[in-house]
Amino acid sequence: MGIFLVVFFGIIFGTYLVTPIYEATARILIHMNPQQQLILFNDLVTPAPTNISLRINPANNLIEISRSKSIAEKIVKTFGLDRPKETQGARESIKNFLSSVLLSPITLMQKLGLLRKKKPDYLSEAVEKFMEDMEDIQLQEDTEIINLVIWAEDPKLASDIANTMAELLVEKLKEMTQTEAGTAYEFTKQQLKIANQSLQEAEEALMSFKNKERIAFLDEEKEIKLNRLNELEAEYHVVSVDLREIQQELLYQEEGSVSDIVIKKNPIIYDLATRVNELESELASVRQKFTEEHPVFISLKAEISENKDKLNKEIKSTVNALNARKNALKDEISVLKRELVQIAEKEIELTRLMRNIETNEERFMTLKNKLLELEVQKVTNMSEFDIQIIDAAHIPEGASPDKPIWPLNIAVGLFASIIIGLGFAFFAEYWNDSLKTNKEIEEHLELPVLGSIPDIRKKGTVKG
Image 1: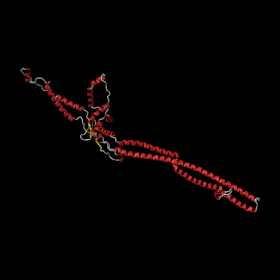
Image 2: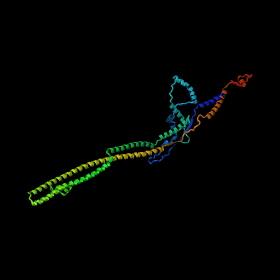
Image 3: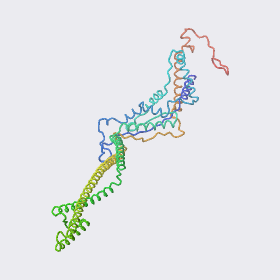
Image 4: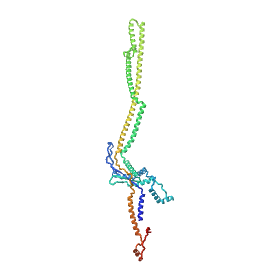
Protein backbone atom coordinates (compact mmCIF):
# COMPACT_ATOMS: atom_id res chain seq x y z
CA MET A 1 0.00 0.00 0.00
CA GLY A 2 2.85 2.35 0.79
CA ILE A 3 4.41 1.83 -2.65
CA PHE A 4 1.05 2.55 -4.27
CA LEU A 5 0.70 5.84 -2.42
CA VAL A 6 4.30 6.91 -3.09
CA VAL A 7 3.97 6.29 -6.83
CA PHE A 8 0.54 7.89 -7.10
CA PHE A 9 1.40 11.05 -5.21
CA GLY A 10 4.76 11.19 -6.99
CA ILE A 11 2.97 11.30 -10.34
CA ILE A 12 0.53 13.92 -9.02
CA PHE A 13 3.41 16.04 -7.71
CA GLY A 14 5.28 15.69 -11.02
CA THR A 15 2.14 16.78 -12.89
CA TYR A 16 1.89 19.80 -10.62
CA LEU A 17 5.47 20.78 -11.43
CA VAL A 18 4.74 20.76 -15.17
CA THR A 19 4.11 24.33 -16.32
CA PRO A 20 0.61 24.67 -17.84
CA ILE A 21 0.84 25.49 -21.54
CA TYR A 22 -1.69 26.33 -24.24
CA GLU A 23 -1.81 25.11 -27.82
CA ALA A 24 -2.51 27.55 -30.66
CA THR A 25 -2.79 26.42 -34.29
CA ALA A 26 -2.68 28.53 -37.43
CA ARG A 27 -3.47 26.86 -40.73
CA ILE A 28 -1.76 27.81 -44.00
CA LEU A 29 -2.74 26.72 -47.51
CA ILE A 30 -0.03 26.60 -50.17
CA HIS A 31 -0.61 25.41 -53.70
CA MET A 32 0.76 25.74 -57.21
CA ASN A 33 -0.56 28.37 -59.58
CA PRO A 34 -1.94 27.65 -63.06
CA GLN A 35 0.52 27.57 -65.93
CA GLN A 36 -0.61 30.98 -67.21
CA GLN A 37 -0.85 34.07 -65.06
CA LEU A 38 -3.74 36.53 -65.05
CA ILE A 39 -3.58 38.84 -68.09
CA LEU A 40 -3.85 42.46 -67.05
CA PHE A 41 -1.63 44.07 -69.70
CA ASN A 42 -0.87 42.41 -73.00
CA ASP A 43 2.77 43.40 -72.95
CA LEU A 44 3.28 42.02 -69.47
CA VAL A 45 1.95 38.50 -69.94
CA THR A 46 4.53 36.05 -68.65
CA PRO A 47 4.01 32.30 -68.52
CA ALA A 48 4.56 30.73 -65.14
CA PRO A 49 7.74 28.65 -64.83
CA THR A 50 7.45 24.98 -65.68
CA ASN A 51 10.76 23.66 -64.41
CA ILE A 52 11.30 20.46 -62.51
CA SER A 53 11.20 22.25 -59.16
CA LEU A 54 7.41 22.38 -59.42
CA ARG A 55 7.29 18.61 -58.82
CA ILE A 56 8.44 19.20 -55.25
CA ASN A 57 5.63 19.76 -52.79
CA PRO A 58 6.03 23.42 -51.78
CA ALA A 59 4.45 22.72 -48.39
CA ASN A 60 7.44 20.60 -47.37
CA ASN A 61 9.79 23.46 -48.24
CA LEU A 62 7.65 25.85 -46.22
CA ILE A 63 7.76 23.54 -43.20
CA GLU A 64 11.56 23.49 -43.35
CA ILE A 65 11.59 27.27 -43.65
CA SER A 66 9.39 27.52 -40.56
CA ARG A 67 11.93 25.41 -38.66
CA SER A 68 14.83 27.59 -39.75
CA LYS A 69 16.97 29.48 -37.28
CA SER A 70 16.22 32.86 -38.86
CA ILE A 71 12.48 32.46 -38.30
CA ALA A 72 13.08 31.27 -34.73
CA GLU A 73 15.30 34.27 -33.95
CA LYS A 74 12.69 36.70 -35.28
CA ILE A 75 9.98 35.13 -33.14
CA VAL A 76 12.17 35.05 -30.03
CA LYS A 77 13.23 38.70 -30.43
CA THR A 78 9.73 39.87 -31.32
CA PHE A 79 8.09 38.37 -28.25
CA GLY A 80 11.06 38.61 -25.87
CA LEU A 81 11.22 34.87 -25.25
CA ASP A 82 14.89 35.21 -24.31
CA ARG A 83 14.15 37.41 -21.29
CA PRO A 84 14.02 35.73 -17.85
CA LYS A 85 10.68 35.69 -16.08
CA GLU A 86 10.19 38.64 -13.77
CA THR A 87 7.77 36.93 -11.37
CA GLN A 88 7.80 33.33 -10.16
CA GLY A 89 5.04 31.35 -8.46
CA ALA A 90 5.24 28.47 -6.04
CA ARG A 91 5.62 25.98 -8.87
CA GLU A 92 8.64 27.74 -10.35
CA SER A 93 10.18 28.19 -6.90
CA ILE A 94 9.90 24.46 -6.21
CA LYS A 95 11.39 23.63 -9.62
CA ASN A 96 14.27 26.03 -9.07
CA PHE A 97 14.90 24.53 -5.63
CA LEU A 98 14.95 20.98 -6.98
CA SER A 99 17.17 22.08 -9.86
CA SER A 100 19.63 23.74 -7.46
CA VAL A 101 19.70 20.59 -5.31
CA LEU A 102 20.35 18.34 -8.29
CA LEU A 103 22.99 20.68 -9.69
CA SER A 104 24.64 21.37 -6.34
CA PRO A 105 27.63 19.08 -7.10
CA ILE A 106 28.31 20.95 -10.32
CA THR A 107 27.88 24.30 -8.53
CA LEU A 108 30.33 23.17 -5.86
CA MET A 109 32.89 22.12 -8.47
CA GLN A 110 32.52 25.50 -10.18
CA LYS A 111 33.13 27.31 -6.90
CA LEU A 112 36.22 25.20 -6.30
CA GLY A 113 37.47 26.08 -9.77
CA LEU A 114 37.29 22.50 -11.04
CA LEU A 115 34.72 23.48 -13.68
CA ARG A 116 34.50 26.71 -15.67
CA LYS A 117 31.23 28.55 -15.24
CA LYS A 118 29.66 29.35 -18.57
CA LYS A 119 28.05 32.71 -19.15
CA PRO A 120 24.36 32.13 -19.96
CA ASP A 121 23.33 32.91 -23.53
CA TYR A 122 19.59 33.42 -23.15
CA LEU A 123 19.00 34.20 -26.83
CA SER A 124 20.68 31.05 -28.14
CA GLU A 125 18.97 28.92 -25.51
CA ALA A 126 15.56 30.41 -26.31
CA VAL A 127 16.10 29.96 -30.08
CA GLU A 128 17.21 26.37 -29.61
CA LYS A 129 14.23 25.59 -27.39
CA PHE A 130 11.84 27.23 -29.85
CA MET A 131 13.31 25.24 -32.76
CA GLU A 132 12.78 22.03 -30.78
CA ASP A 133 9.11 22.93 -30.32
CA MET A 134 8.80 23.42 -34.11
CA GLU A 135 8.64 19.63 -34.51
CA ASP A 136 4.89 19.99 -34.02
CA ILE A 137 4.57 21.81 -37.39
CA GLN A 138 3.22 19.18 -39.75
CA LEU A 139 1.57 18.85 -43.16
CA GLN A 140 -2.00 17.70 -42.90
CA GLU A 141 -2.30 14.33 -44.61
CA ASP A 142 -3.51 14.28 -48.22
CA THR A 143 -3.80 18.09 -48.29
CA GLU A 144 -1.70 21.17 -49.00
CA ILE A 145 -2.50 22.61 -45.57
CA ILE A 146 0.19 23.20 -42.96
CA ASN A 147 -0.72 23.22 -39.27
CA LEU A 148 1.47 25.67 -37.36
CA VAL A 149 1.20 24.41 -33.78
CA ILE A 150 2.64 26.70 -31.10
CA TRP A 151 2.83 26.02 -27.35
CA ALA A 152 3.11 28.81 -24.78
CA GLU A 153 2.37 29.44 -21.12
CA ASP A 154 -0.02 32.28 -22.02
CA PRO A 155 -2.97 31.71 -24.40
CA LYS A 156 -2.68 35.14 -26.04
CA LEU A 157 1.07 34.70 -26.46
CA ALA A 158 0.56 31.32 -28.13
CA SER A 159 -1.99 32.80 -30.58
CA ASP A 160 0.18 35.82 -31.34
CA ILE A 161 3.26 33.69 -31.99
CA ALA A 162 1.33 31.35 -34.30
CA ASN A 163 -0.23 34.22 -36.30
CA THR A 164 3.04 36.15 -36.49
CA MET A 165 4.87 33.07 -37.66
CA ALA A 166 2.23 32.46 -40.34
CA GLU A 167 2.64 36.05 -41.58
CA LEU A 168 6.44 35.68 -41.61
CA LEU A 169 6.17 32.53 -43.70
CA VAL A 170 3.84 34.26 -46.18
CA GLU A 171 6.26 37.18 -46.53
CA LYS A 172 9.24 34.85 -46.79
CA LEU A 173 7.70 32.81 -49.59
CA LYS A 174 6.64 35.93 -51.49
CA GLU A 175 10.17 37.27 -51.16
CA MET A 176 11.66 34.00 -52.40
CA THR A 177 9.27 33.78 -55.35
CA GLN A 178 9.69 37.35 -56.57
CA THR A 179 8.81 37.50 -60.25
CA GLU A 180 10.15 39.44 -63.23
CA ALA A 181 7.40 42.03 -62.75
CA GLY A 182 8.80 42.81 -59.31
CA THR A 183 12.30 43.23 -60.68
CA ALA A 184 10.99 45.35 -63.55
CA TYR A 185 9.04 47.45 -61.04
CA GLU A 186 12.16 48.30 -59.05
CA PHE A 187 14.12 49.04 -62.23
CA THR A 188 11.33 51.27 -63.60
CA LYS A 189 11.09 53.03 -60.25
CA GLN A 190 14.78 53.94 -60.40
CA GLN A 191 14.49 55.05 -64.02
CA LEU A 192 11.47 57.19 -63.10
CA LYS A 193 13.56 59.04 -60.52
CA ILE A 194 16.27 59.66 -63.14
CA ALA A 195 13.66 60.81 -65.69
CA ASN A 196 12.10 63.16 -63.13
CA GLN A 197 15.50 64.67 -62.35
CA SER A 198 16.25 65.10 -66.09
CA LEU A 199 12.89 66.79 -66.60
CA GLN A 200 13.53 69.21 -63.74
CA GLU A 201 16.97 70.04 -65.12
CA ALA A 202 15.50 70.66 -68.59
CA GLU A 203 12.81 72.95 -67.15
CA GLU A 204 15.42 74.85 -65.12
CA ALA A 205 17.60 75.26 -68.22
CA LEU A 206 14.64 76.65 -70.20
CA MET A 207 13.71 79.04 -67.41
CA SER A 208 17.29 80.25 -67.09
CA PHE A 209 17.55 80.81 -70.84
CA LYS A 210 14.27 82.74 -70.94
CA ASN A 211 15.30 84.97 -68.04
CA LYS A 212 18.71 85.61 -69.54
CA GLU A 213 17.52 86.37 -73.08
CA ARG A 214 14.16 87.91 -72.10
CA ILE A 215 12.38 85.34 -74.21
CA ALA A 216 9.01 86.45 -72.88
CA PHE A 217 9.11 89.39 -75.39
CA LEU A 218 10.89 87.56 -78.17
CA ASP A 219 7.88 87.34 -80.48
CA GLU A 220 7.04 91.01 -80.04
CA GLU A 221 10.66 92.03 -80.60
CA LYS A 222 10.85 89.86 -83.70
CA GLU A 223 7.65 91.35 -85.10
CA ILE A 224 8.83 94.91 -84.49
CA LYS A 225 12.20 94.26 -86.10
CA LEU A 226 10.63 92.54 -89.12
CA ASN A 227 8.25 95.48 -89.66
CA ARG A 228 11.13 97.92 -89.33
CA LEU A 229 13.22 95.84 -91.74
CA ASN A 230 10.43 95.87 -94.30
CA GLU A 231 10.13 99.64 -93.98
CA LEU A 232 13.88 100.16 -94.33
CA GLU A 233 14.14 97.85 -97.31
CA ALA A 234 11.24 99.63 -99.01
CA GLU A 235 12.86 103.00 -98.35
CA TYR A 236 16.23 101.63 -99.47
CA HIS A 237 14.65 100.51 -102.69
CA VAL A 238 13.08 103.94 -103.30
CA VAL A 239 16.34 105.75 -102.55
CA SER A 240 18.27 103.38 -104.78
CA VAL A 241 15.84 103.90 -107.65
CA ASP A 242 15.88 107.67 -107.24
CA LEU A 243 19.66 107.76 -107.07
CA ARG A 244 20.02 105.54 -110.07
CA GLU A 245 17.60 107.68 -112.16
CA ILE A 246 19.32 110.91 -111.17
CA GLN A 247 22.74 109.49 -111.98
CA GLN A 248 21.55 108.27 -115.37
CA GLU A 249 20.00 111.68 -116.20
CA LEU A 250 23.17 113.48 -115.24
CA LEU A 251 25.24 111.37 -117.60
CA TYR A 252 23.31 112.41 -120.68
CA GLN A 253 22.53 116.07 -119.88
CA GLU A 254 24.62 119.19 -120.24
CA GLU A 255 25.79 121.01 -117.17
CA GLY A 256 23.12 123.29 -115.90
CA SER A 257 20.27 121.42 -117.55
CA VAL A 258 17.93 119.44 -115.34
CA SER A 259 15.45 116.74 -116.24
CA ASP A 260 11.89 116.72 -115.03
CA ILE A 261 12.69 113.63 -112.89
CA VAL A 262 15.36 115.48 -110.94
CA ILE A 263 13.20 118.57 -110.57
CA LYS A 264 10.34 116.58 -109.08
CA LYS A 265 12.61 115.01 -106.44
CA ASN A 266 13.66 118.34 -104.83
CA PRO A 267 11.65 121.62 -104.53
CA ILE A 268 14.84 123.71 -104.25
CA ILE A 269 16.05 122.30 -107.52
CA TYR A 270 12.61 122.96 -108.91
CA ASP A 271 12.78 126.63 -107.92
CA LEU A 272 16.33 127.07 -109.23
CA ALA A 273 15.51 125.34 -112.53
CA THR A 274 12.40 127.50 -112.93
CA ARG A 275 14.45 130.62 -112.26
CA VAL A 276 17.13 129.57 -114.79
CA ASN A 277 14.46 128.98 -117.44
CA GLU A 278 12.92 132.36 -116.79
CA LEU A 279 16.28 134.08 -117.02
CA GLU A 280 17.16 132.28 -120.24
CA SER A 281 13.84 133.35 -121.79
CA GLU A 282 14.51 136.91 -120.73
CA LEU A 283 18.09 136.68 -122.12
CA ALA A 284 16.74 135.57 -125.51
CA SER A 285 14.44 138.61 -125.58
CA VAL A 286 17.27 140.96 -124.61
CA ARG A 287 19.55 139.50 -127.26
CA GLN A 288 17.11 140.75 -129.88
CA LYS A 289 17.30 144.28 -128.53
CA PHE A 290 20.85 144.57 -127.27
CA THR A 291 24.25 143.32 -128.12
CA GLU A 292 26.17 140.90 -125.96
CA GLU A 293 28.29 143.73 -124.61
CA HIS A 294 25.29 145.54 -123.32
CA PRO A 295 25.18 145.74 -119.52
CA VAL A 296 21.68 144.24 -119.34
CA PHE A 297 22.72 141.26 -121.40
CA ILE A 298 25.87 140.79 -119.37
CA SER A 299 23.90 141.05 -116.09
CA LEU A 300 21.34 138.47 -117.15
CA LYS A 301 24.01 136.09 -118.31
CA ALA A 302 25.87 136.45 -115.05
CA GLU A 303 22.68 135.80 -113.07
CA ILE A 304 21.93 132.71 -115.19
CA SER A 305 25.43 131.41 -114.58
CA GLU A 306 25.07 132.01 -110.84
CA ASN A 307 21.76 130.18 -110.68
CA LYS A 308 23.14 127.27 -112.72
CA ASP A 309 26.02 126.96 -110.27
CA LYS A 310 23.56 126.87 -107.42
CA LEU A 311 21.49 124.33 -109.33
CA ASN A 312 24.49 122.08 -109.96
CA LYS A 313 25.55 122.29 -106.33
CA GLU A 314 22.03 121.43 -105.19
CA ILE A 315 21.91 118.47 -107.57
CA LYS A 316 25.27 117.18 -106.27
CA SER A 317 24.10 117.80 -102.72
CA THR A 318 20.95 115.82 -103.45
CA VAL A 319 22.96 112.98 -104.96
CA ASN A 320 25.29 112.97 -101.96
CA ALA A 321 22.33 113.02 -99.55
CA LEU A 322 20.75 110.10 -101.39
CA ASN A 323 24.03 108.18 -101.25
CA ALA A 324 24.39 108.90 -97.54
CA ARG A 325 20.81 107.86 -96.90
CA LYS A 326 21.31 104.73 -98.97
CA ASN A 327 24.44 103.78 -97.00
CA ALA A 328 22.72 104.53 -93.68
CA LEU A 329 19.78 102.40 -94.68
CA LYS A 330 22.12 99.65 -95.77
CA ASP A 331 23.93 99.70 -92.42
CA GLU A 332 20.67 99.74 -90.46
CA ILE A 333 19.32 96.91 -92.56
CA SER A 334 22.49 94.91 -91.88
CA VAL A 335 22.16 95.51 -88.13
CA LEU A 336 18.51 94.45 -88.18
CA LYS A 337 19.34 91.33 -90.14
CA ARG A 338 22.05 90.39 -87.64
CA GLU A 339 19.61 90.95 -84.81
CA LEU A 340 17.03 88.84 -86.58
CA VAL A 341 19.65 86.13 -87.06
CA GLN A 342 20.34 86.27 -83.32
CA ILE A 343 16.62 86.05 -82.65
CA ALA A 344 16.45 83.05 -84.98
CA GLU A 345 19.34 81.45 -83.08
CA LYS A 346 17.50 82.12 -79.83
CA GLU A 347 14.39 80.57 -81.32
CA ILE A 348 16.40 77.52 -82.34
CA GLU A 349 17.84 77.22 -78.84
CA LEU A 350 14.41 77.79 -77.36
CA THR A 351 12.95 75.12 -79.63
CA ARG A 352 15.74 72.74 -78.66
CA LEU A 353 15.16 73.35 -74.96
CA MET A 354 11.40 72.95 -75.34
CA ARG A 355 11.87 69.80 -77.38
CA ASN A 356 14.19 68.51 -74.65
CA ILE A 357 11.45 69.18 -72.09
CA GLU A 358 8.86 67.45 -74.26
CA THR A 359 11.14 64.44 -74.70
CA ASN A 360 11.86 64.19 -70.98
CA GLU A 361 8.21 64.75 -70.11
CA GLU A 362 7.12 62.06 -72.55
CA ARG A 363 9.73 59.69 -71.11
CA PHE A 364 8.64 60.56 -67.57
CA MET A 365 4.95 59.95 -68.31
CA THR A 366 5.75 56.70 -70.13
CA LEU A 367 7.76 55.43 -67.16
CA LYS A 368 5.11 56.65 -64.72
CA ASN A 369 2.33 54.82 -66.56
CA LYS A 370 4.51 51.72 -66.86
CA LEU A 371 5.27 51.90 -63.14
CA LEU A 372 1.56 51.97 -62.35
CA GLU A 373 1.03 48.96 -64.60
CA LEU A 374 3.92 47.10 -63.00
CA GLU A 375 2.69 47.99 -59.54
CA VAL A 376 -0.62 46.30 -60.29
CA GLN A 377 1.22 43.48 -62.00
CA LYS A 378 3.50 43.07 -59.01
CA VAL A 379 0.56 42.70 -56.64
CA THR A 380 -1.56 40.44 -58.83
CA ASN A 381 1.19 38.55 -60.60
CA MET A 382 1.01 34.78 -60.15
CA SER A 383 4.27 33.27 -58.98
CA GLU A 384 5.10 29.59 -58.78
CA PHE A 385 3.14 29.16 -55.57
CA ASP A 386 0.25 30.86 -53.86
CA ILE A 387 0.04 30.97 -50.07
CA GLN A 388 -2.71 32.19 -47.78
CA ILE A 389 -3.68 31.92 -44.14
CA ILE A 390 -7.00 30.06 -44.00
CA ASP A 391 -7.33 29.89 -40.20
CA ALA A 392 -5.75 32.31 -37.76
CA ALA A 393 -4.81 31.01 -34.33
CA HIS A 394 -7.23 31.92 -31.56
CA ILE A 395 -7.69 30.65 -28.02
CA PRO A 396 -10.94 31.79 -26.36
CA GLU A 397 -10.84 33.49 -22.98
CA GLY A 398 -11.10 31.19 -20.01
CA ALA A 399 -9.80 28.18 -21.92
CA SER A 400 -8.08 25.48 -19.88
CA PRO A 401 -4.42 24.64 -20.51
CA ASP A 402 -3.83 21.88 -23.02
CA LYS A 403 -1.02 20.45 -20.93
CA PRO A 404 -0.76 18.89 -18.43
CA ILE A 405 -3.97 16.85 -18.76
CA TRP A 406 -4.92 16.25 -15.13
CA PRO A 407 -7.65 13.60 -15.65
CA LEU A 408 -5.35 11.60 -17.90
CA ASN A 409 -2.39 11.93 -15.54
CA ILE A 410 -4.52 10.93 -12.53
CA ALA A 411 -5.80 7.89 -14.42
CA VAL A 412 -2.29 7.02 -15.51
CA GLY A 413 -1.08 7.57 -11.93
CA LEU A 414 -3.69 5.19 -10.56
CA PHE A 415 -2.95 2.56 -13.15
CA ALA A 416 0.82 2.92 -12.74
CA SER A 417 0.52 2.85 -8.95
CA ILE A 418 -1.52 -0.34 -9.07
CA ILE A 419 0.83 -2.00 -11.53
CA ILE A 420 3.95 -0.93 -9.63
CA GLY A 421 2.39 -1.86 -6.28
CA LEU A 422 1.38 -5.33 -7.49
CA GLY A 423 4.70 -5.81 -9.17
CA PHE A 424 6.57 -4.80 -6.05
CA ALA A 425 4.45 -7.13 -3.93
CA PHE A 426 5.00 -9.98 -6.35
CA PHE A 427 8.76 -9.53 -6.44
CA ALA A 428 8.90 -9.01 -2.65
CA GLU A 429 7.01 -12.23 -2.16
CA TYR A 430 9.10 -13.99 -4.78
CA TRP A 431 12.42 -13.04 -3.20
CA ASN A 432 11.22 -13.56 0.42
CA ASP A 433 12.88 -16.85 1.73
CA SER A 434 11.33 -16.83 5.24
CA LEU A 435 9.32 -19.90 6.49
CA LYS A 436 5.68 -19.14 6.98
CA THR A 437 3.84 -22.44 7.57
CA ASN A 438 4.40 -25.57 9.72
CA LYS A 439 4.76 -27.65 6.61
CA GLU A 440 7.54 -25.45 5.22
CA ILE A 441 9.39 -25.72 8.57
CA GLU A 442 9.13 -29.53 8.65
CA GLU A 443 10.25 -29.81 5.01
CA HIS A 444 13.28 -27.52 5.36
CA LEU A 445 14.37 -28.52 8.91
CA GLU A 446 13.13 -32.12 8.85
CA LEU A 447 11.96 -31.65 12.42
CA PRO A 448 8.43 -31.89 13.80
CA VAL A 449 6.63 -28.76 14.90
CA LEU A 450 5.78 -28.86 18.61
CA GLY A 451 3.58 -25.76 18.67
CA SER A 452 2.98 -22.22 17.45
CA ILE A 453 2.47 -18.82 19.08
CA PRO A 454 -0.55 -16.99 17.71
CA ASP A 455 -0.22 -13.32 16.50
CA ILE A 456 -2.27 -11.34 19.01
CA ARG A 457 -2.70 -7.59 18.45
CA LYS A 458 -4.05 -5.17 20.97
CA LYS A 459 -6.57 -2.58 19.96
CA GLY A 460 -4.89 0.61 18.88
CA THR A 461 -1.48 -1.02 18.26
CA VAL A 462 0.29 -1.57 14.97
CA LYS A 463 2.25 -4.71 14.16
CA GLY A 464 5.95 -3.94 13.94
